[in-house]
Image (cartoon, rainbow, N blue to C red; front, side):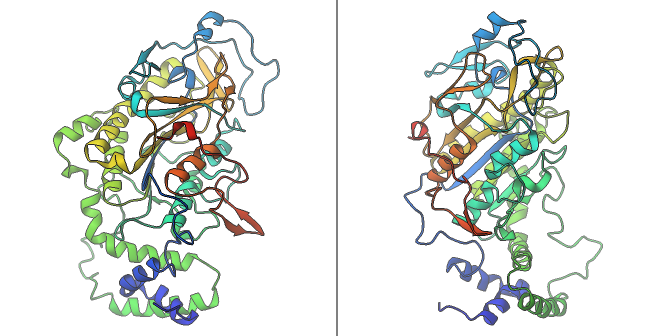
Amino acid sequence: MGQPDRRNLLEGIASGFASVAISAMLARDGLAGPSPIHGGLHHRPRARRVIELFMNGGASPMDTFDHKPALERLHGQNLGPKVKPEGFTAMPGAIMKSPFSFRRHGQSGRWVSEVFPEQARLVDEMAFLMAMQSKTNVHGQGAYLMTTGFTLPGFPCMGSWISHALGNIADNLPTFVVLPDARGLPYNQQGCFSSGFLPAAHQGMVINAGAARPVPDLFPPPSFPFATREADADGLDMLSRLNRAHAERHPGDSRLASRVASYELAARMQASAPEAFDISREPAMAHKAYGIGEKSTDDFGRRCLLACRLVERGVRFVQVWSGPQGATNNWDNHGSIVRELPPMAASVDRPIAALLRDLRARGLDEDTLVVWTTEFGRTPFAQGSTGRDHNGGSFVSWLWGAGVKGGVSHGESDEWGYQAAVDKTTGHDMHATILHLLGIDHERLTVRNNGIDRRLTDVHGKVIESVLA
């Protein structure tokens, strides 16, 4: 296909539903739609798709995966900072031991808290990052840092970078899907799934998994039987002319092209989405494994099962959030670790284990990467009586699946779990590693914005070689 002139390209982009086939061909030639890396992948990929499980609010490491016997010995002693650190919501209290018991699991002997009994059975398949560190103790900044690589808004998130770099796998489903908690969006709202300065087509598509129609307005409501494809022909023709005129007046604005692309995708999804998003098609034993139908696990289990179905059908990046923003129903356990952490852990533990087993059973573990993370950790010091405050000093993440060496860990926190101590890793390092597994060199994936060659990892990041198979 030859290089089209500007007018023809604008007409092709703006021609509405009638240009579905044309735009698909243009996308494959790099002229429209997702933008491939010039020259293809930087190296042979191990993974084709990613599921990210994000524990919103700051999951406590010393109460989940980072066993710290020293906290039992020092319990009740006032050994914390004498001045309130930035981002803490109160002065640090006395050192507090974990109220939960730990024991070793698997051949790797990984310590896991009793709050995660199901994930504990799978530790030999996971690679743990035990000394993750954030440069902020503030939720909004921490969530931005872990999703976009920057603490400020306006930058593309990882899913958008991956969409921009690799494009879609399937033409009839979105490239980047976000499944938020049914109780609300996370900190920063949709900023955590924004395309920033990348074309708007690469932003995450937010799906309400619990709705009767997860993708709203995909079909006309029954109350408008006259709204058929044939009846829309004249309106679409007028819209096409308006789109062409707008595109010519605003050649640097990607929002129109994104809107047209979204409607073209919607046209294709009318055939594929009803099946892809319908988890009722899964057998009863699958629903039971994910905990669907049980109050504590229904929402997260439903979204994990949907994530599995979506990557199986060609979605490139799926983000599953646990917990909304705010002071309750998430991992921000200021009030009481004893009361607040167990229900959050119970809501995700069984669904996550079911997801990993299901991916393996479907053969998707060979090219699917699963990432479990949070924006930062919690303090080893009590807040109030049994709560824990924000702490960017150390937290835990893990990787599973394609290209990951199971049963290993990288890094250590100090004896309290307060600060990363050995082989510190950051969100930039984790992003670099994820991109590496997808066949992308994080230093070469750049877009020039405001005179700077921006990248997901900013000017930081290294691939964590020890967790790669």
